Image (cartoon, rainbow, N blue to C red):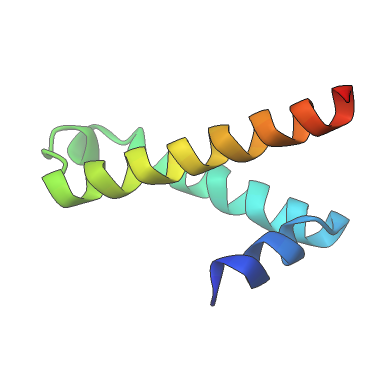
Length: 68
């Protein structure tokens, strides 16, 4: 699914609940000791950092727009 489409889905209440459910499931999986012992692949870390940077940029732009 294209990122633009994902963003539109997440704006709906049902989409937000689905996204949050997925996040909770991922966190529960990641907290398992056998999973926590495994190293994280460098390419996954790069993708994660890029995604977090986009999220932070998106939020700062929205806040900036609201203030002006």
